[in-house]
Amino acid sequence: MQADDAGKPAHLDLVVSHCDRPLNWISFFVTRPMSSVTVYSKCNQTVEGAPAQARIIRMDNIGRCDHTYAHWLVQQGNRIPPDRQANDLILFVKDNDMSDRHIGDEAVAFEEMVHVATGSARFACGRWWPKHSLYHVREALGQFRHGNLVYKIWQSKDKERDQQAFTSNFSSLAEWTNAMGFRSIWENHTLVPVCYGGLFLTTYSQILRPHLDTWKHLESSLSRGDNIEEGHFAERSWAALLSEPLEVRKQVKILSQVQLVWAYPMNGMLRLHPPS
Image 1 (cartoon, rainbow, N blue to C red):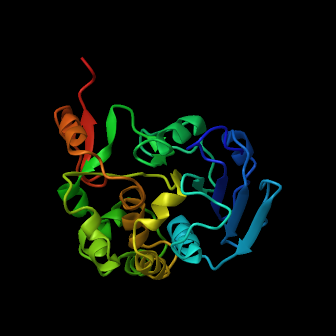
Image 2: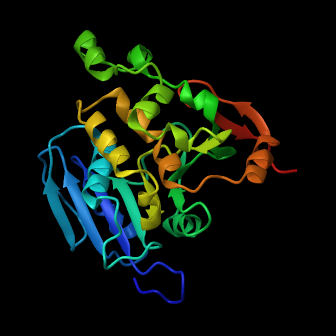
């Protein structure tokens, strides 16, 4: 990727969290040249379909994609490499392809992600919910906790063991963010962004926003096990950590359109009235 005029990103780097799925889809989804691809493979499986320039790094199977991203950020050391610029792009992605859906969400086209990430937010999410805002009510979001509730849905052969392994020592997302050292990023805002799904695009400028200790705290917290509650806390935190705060006037505009504020598990998600 070459810069075609001032301010445009010249490089696109990929950070891939791999378990056991083929990666062929990445070359179809990413519509721009990739400067580098780092694949962290965690499940001791063959990496199939990775882009030709991919560097494969084997890791222990802990913390899922959120631990992978935190580890990469720690390795960066809160610096922009000499051959990169602040506006160059980083795509964080899991191995599951864009056809995977959660609860009513849809995929965002890569060029649309680039458009958003090179705008004022400096961050773009790869999934979106029609008729909903990326922004959540901070107070409601901070109360999120999976805890034991998730095991009313999930099936397990040894539910008591897995429940104990999953459940964290934190009473809420807000308590976890405080322990990680970045709750101050949220404190002066009614609305904060949330990106579900583990696929997002940002710029090198944004990885410098939190102190390096924040990334270290995240990596350590997410090292506790494989399927852990802390991963759900991290999923709900990436957008706030890596995007520019929303202007007050834009927060007010979103709040004026609110139809419904969701509770668990999408604490604070806003359903908006359709445009008139």
